[in-house]
Length: 66
Image (cartoon, rainbow, N blue to C red; front, side, top):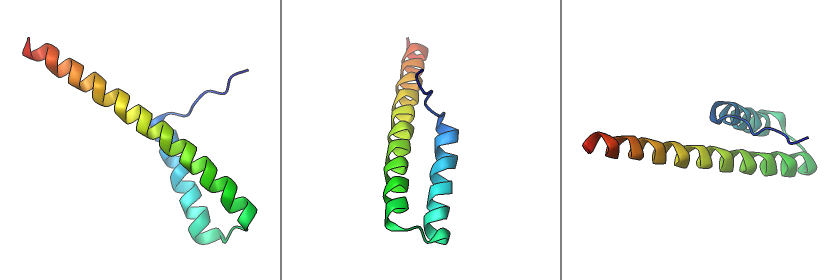
């Protein structure tokens, strides 16, 4: 079964949660490594979604100019 990627909003919420845990939770090195790895993965998802949305907006704007 394939795990569904989170939406931009869900990814951002999880990133914020990770940052809060790092700032306030004093995680050990093993936990910190896993948290950073997950945060990087989520940032990549956000960047991908932003690029996709940017492309869609630019396409729609070009269609308006025609």
